[in-house]
Image (cartoon, rainbow, N blue to C red; front, side, top):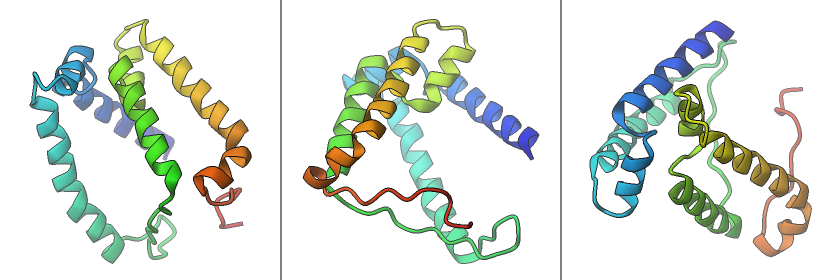
Amino acid sequence: MVLLYVFLGTVFGFVLSRSGAADYNYIQGMFLLEKFQLYGIIGTAVLIGIPGVYLLKRHGHTASGAMLIVRGKPRHRGNIAGGILFGIGWSITGMCPGPIVVNIGEGKIYALAALAGALTGAALFGSLYERLRRPFRLPALQYGTGDG
């Protein structure tokens, strides 16, 4: 099963690389409203994702054969703050999590700084979560998968 995941991740990374979705200049051009190719890529992903998630919710099964249950995420103030921070990081570095790995795979050393920033931000958020719960109305942390 791990080999399947490695294969699918490699294919996904290849598509990101070849489409320009991991290219700093394309991403900066998108944010500056100078290049519109990535808007088409994102729009295509949304148009494919909507019926895909619908079909998974309606007909999907887990590897063990149980019905697949896709629950909505809770809405809270933290979504807005997190979205703003994500957007700022994306626009400054020209990378979100997938393209960070693609750029490292392409040998772009500056992507290591973006990876360090993403990991530092995630660790900082994790360590401050309990302090941020009340002001951002975040849900309580749940540990594990819930499946025992």
